[in-house]
Length: 556
Image 1 (cartoon, rainbow, N blue to C red):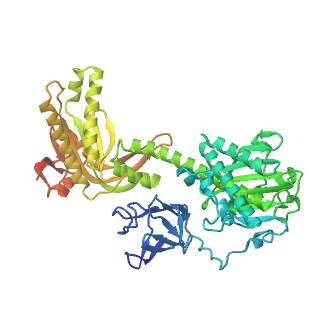
Image 2: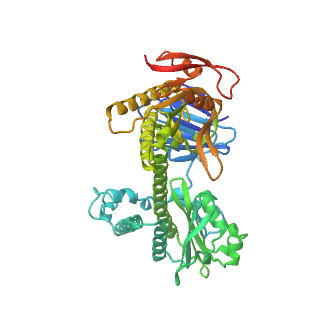
Image 3: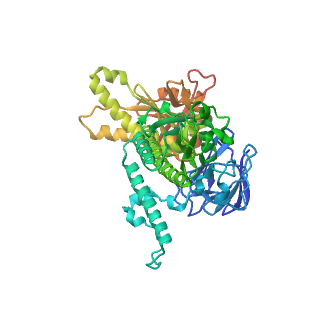
């Protein structure tokens, strides 16, 4: 069992079991861990189980979620990781997770990162974290603020006006890098599609780095495989992606270890001598960097030469890493934009059946929040009295207009009372209170909603002379149900099943026009707040034992 051990903050020292697949932390009571802290957002972060591991997600909080003192958006947790949310500090413990890697006492010097890591004096491996600061311009933020490249020059404004030639040259080189990266970022931001972004990036790479062939590959989220997107040859221009087959050993190492890699003579590089693609496709020298943004890798940029050895330099590696970072930022923007669009569609669909705040909770939970589970809920069936007789007197368009008005009225009141509209069955509305999100007062909300529907319909009937008058009868019952997504692969829907649902439908049939009939379990939960009149015990169809029925009169 995974645990969060509180070591600091307002909760006091204690252990909290992470006993759910989706485990939330935030300032509101509906979170699994309620943190009454002004630094914590209403819904701050979530732990979600993926297989045997837990992943920590920051939910767009204002003050951030930190793991081992580093701010994160998403992080797969290791055993022993330190999680900080506001003033609260937790240690994550999970026997199914590998132990947190030991931190090195000292960062290696740049010279130690060159070649000596893997052998070969002309082969270079660098971590993405070692990209020099002058290549780390935040182009997106700069563009948003309306800066031009001139605003981005480096150098101390308070320094003496006269500088020696070497210092002046260094500053000019930094200015050129800022100018290049700024215009690259602006160019990538202007492209309409991701394909155009990748194509533009590859053209820029060939303009500043001497390579014969190049390809950009992105990671397919579903399969985890690298998929080639665009390719280029220095003499032939844009080519088919199938014409550039990168070394699998090189690209896999780059993705897994987040390394920048140069191999100056791949055939004699001990790291890659077993690579079949290096031999088969006559790869002499290669350079590869990840498409990286913070801790996330979206793919790789791969360059090679089939004839030349030693064509790439450390400066090429730096500039390629910087370009890859700008491309990755655009990819992440694209993913977030598509996610927002999909969430908006999903939210819009959900809000047809759930109240906005419940829809928001379900969106955060994802599919796990709608898995079938047993719980107590209150079911309401609301039906138009004598609908068949009324329909015989109307034309089809009039029937549709009447039903639309009735469904709109009933659904609005149900959602206002935090119920969910489960389905429309002919002229009947089935609704559920207490599922998918549990509420202690689900029975009271269901009865209040039923009373509101009757009152609203009576008001419309009394105040409209030309409108078709009709009445409804309502049945309400509380009991244990199985609630969740149920169906086939082609069609699935959220619904509730169980004897409590069948009883609610039977009670609705017992009610007369304008009447609300409830079962004994519902009555026991609402009698302190609702006036009811006993109707006696009856044996409902399909049940062996009698049930005490009650008519709802009104609120006390």
